[in-house]
Image 1: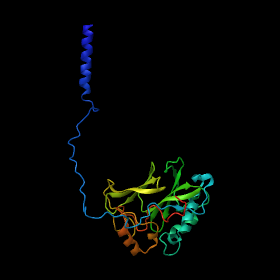
Image 2: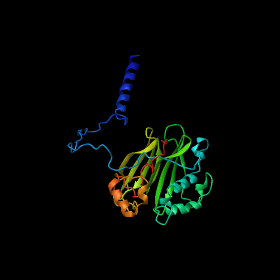
Image 3: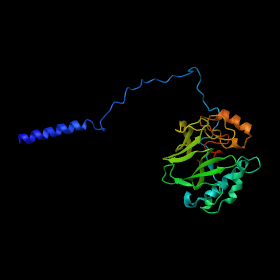
Image 4: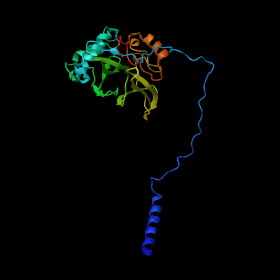
Length: 283
């Protein structure tokens, strides 16, 4: 019995010694950097009580003329939704000077019905459905090619009080779009080689709209010349005011861009969360 006991103890010691070299053990992470408190600049300045420029982040828009059968957004025809936007904002889509005039012309290539966007040459991209508001019902995320500007429009729609409501609209030169949780994440090329812009729009239940919650510039890991962000985008700042700048002249758009854009460097025709103030009674 004594011999068996000694053998058991020796085995336990050897096992513990072998475990000391296990990669699962704790390791030192090095010295902790010294915390530096933030320094407040120009404390003598009087805090602003109102924004200098209106960006329209929480504007929403009822889509007129598009029914939602049974409040099921999946039964809404995506092509019909884009046609309704073109009709509501003819200054952007119709006429020789309209920035997206080629998109309006290409809509003739789209078919009818829920699969009409599949037709070759149709500028409406594949629709995606996901619950972005947390109410258990899917929202509609649409993309549309905006030509000849070579931009892509991203739209998010929800159903409120039996009506189709646009809760986000954003136009830019895109390198990727993702849906994550309650957010739409948009990546856009930067003028700085090896970097891109990353914008995150997140559903806000108080405003009942998708708000721009993150706007940052991140390395891509690839050192290569970035494509032109837009024909006239020379600034490296962020969201322009809502839909109207796209109908301005190039010079006016550049002036607006210099005044109102945050660090996301979108094109002059890009707009923040939608376009026109909601009619009375709309979220």
